[in-house]
Image 1: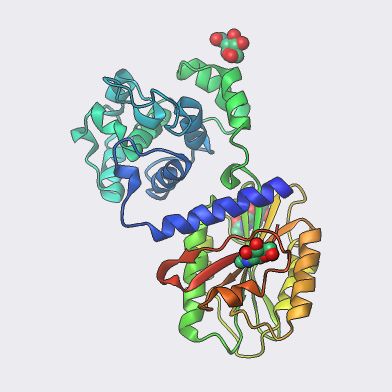
Image 2: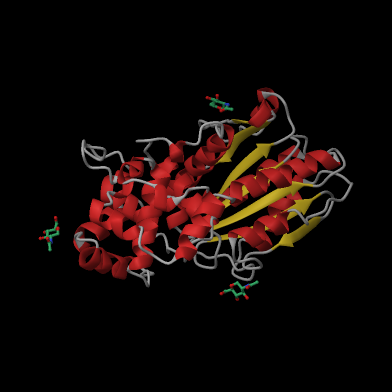
Length: 353
Ligand SMILES: *[C@@H]1O[C@H](CO)[C@@H](O)[C@H](O)[C@H]1NC(C)=O
Ligand SMILES: *[C@@H]1O[C@H](CO)[C@@H](O)[C@H](O)[C@H]1NC(C)=O
Ligand SMILES: *[C@@H]1O[C@H](CO)[C@@H](O)[C@H](O)[C@H]1NC(C)=O
């Protein structure tokens, strides 16, 4: 659990940092590389809905082919295959497919594929699209790691043993793991309607980067004031899109701030078998608060119990403006990581890990 937790923390932080640096789209920058770039690329490709489900294959291939572009020689002279190391021959074959792909790639990703050149694959998104087109050409796309390894050897001139070996090294990332993620939103009177909208937007923004599904990330949303409402339960929505939409339908009550009741509810209801939480999954709770819980010591105690149950708890003080307030949540004395999300109004601090 420990390692899941810290991987989750890093992931969440990088999600947030990506959100703040939208000005430069690295996925279209030649020779951009690294895990966050690959993740952003895969997520754009997924959201374009131009292709079938890749069952994490695309991301894994990026690692196996070039360690997300970080392996030396990934961008060598006269070889333009990019992060996915697509050969010139395979690239040529991507230009000879059903026109529905080109229409969608144009419409959703604004790329005229037939006008591209092999050299364009030095850009992450282009290399990823070429990889996805190649998988479509060779489809059906294998679902599990073992069959993906065989496929890698048979069709992609790779080595199956090496594939399995390599992907076991990438397993720490949350989207390759089972993750049960509960968001807790502050619906009390001290949160204005527009602040509540902001916290829903934030939730939706974070979710954008997760593959939601029964076997991947499950999502729950709870709001609290002096009562606790389980607005969204695990398995109620099984796709990233549908759960992101559902988040916006959550409403707020105007009463007191009983954060500890929300945390109790996570423990007794959300993160239980009955709540459709998985024992073997990494568990994360993202608590949004104005930082003024009516009973702080109860809150800290409840957070501690959650931690003991293997849940990694993040408090996101979405409304508070200063580090001092965030420090109130510094109950573990461990190193906490804080993050400024857009406009410096969101500070993330890990309560327990
Ligand atoms: C695949 O890689 C493994 C480990 O590097 C090696 O022992 C094996 O011989 C390779 N298999 C093939 C078919 O090349
Ligand atoms: C989500 O998936 C679970 C498990 O496969 C299923 O029981 C449930 O009905 C699904 N929910 C929806 C809304 O499709
Ligand atoms: C939390 O406590 C630790 C140890 O006392 C300290 O190093 C850290 O700066 C504190 N604050 C945050 C927000 O991490």
